[in-house]
Image (cartoon, rainbow, N blue to C red; front, top):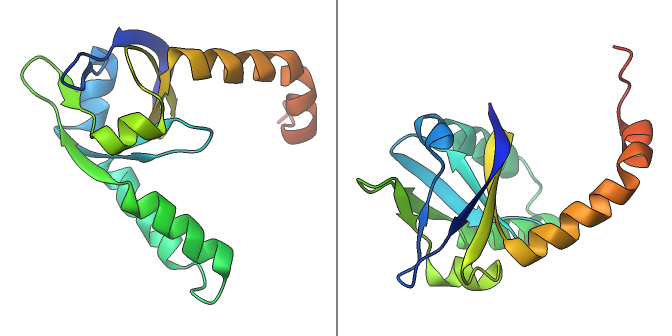
Length: 143
């Protein structure tokens, strides 16, 4: 399971260090794509296969389903770690997520998310302000 928050800079060539704790779980070859809320999602191949299977069940006749799968799959790119534990973020994905220098890489259960530090700050602050309310509406902690 992916968890934690790490800060790394993306270099001028678009390379980003993947935190050591995430490398083994991601494997040598994994998928990075556009995520929600202006971040990137990265999935190990096994998790990507599960997600792909779920998305293939969406009805082709529904406009939202077609739009979402186009957006999600057209941005997908296979990535490999180099010897220094870095990946090369494709320029279209870096542009989508506003990745320029400072990034935040977070573990979110079955995936990692790659954020610009600025965007992550905004999202984190909004979530922090309403965390108790969100939890109350979504989760029963008395399980």
